[in-house]
Length: 157
Ligand code: FES
Image 1 (cartoon, helix red, strand yellow):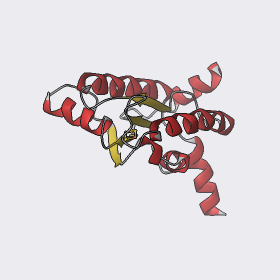
Image 2 (cartoon, rainbow, N blue to C red):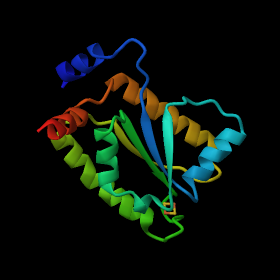
Image 3 (cartoon, rainbow, N blue to C red):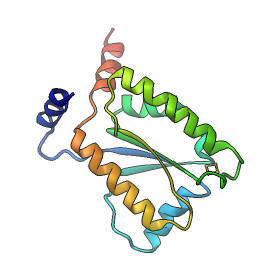
Image 4 (cartoon, helix red, strand yellow):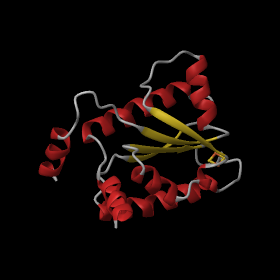
């Protein structure tokens, strides 16, 4: 494990910046991101946001595909438990995420590349903090190559 991490750090190009895809629930986390912006809170500009109606709408394949197509990390963020506008979407997302973690581990994706967080519309500060933590965690891991290479081999064959 230690050796694998050391290897990915060595492969980092000098100007490399993590690319993180953030799936944000429209009702809470996206609004939290908006609040962080309007409050002029500082956080790393490494995320590309995809607004989804609910965290429960995020199919685990979206996450795998993001990693296959060059994302170094993925954040899924939705309403706090009990606050989902579709009642149970965030519980569904949490269950899926727990299962996906085992699959990612099996595929050799390091823990920390894919993260899940609850952020409400009033938590601009928390959103900025979550994005900062996710960015730093992915930065430490280095570029995600594993699924990109698998995709390139698949395309070549
Ligand atoms: Fe936000 Fe479901 S509406 S997680």
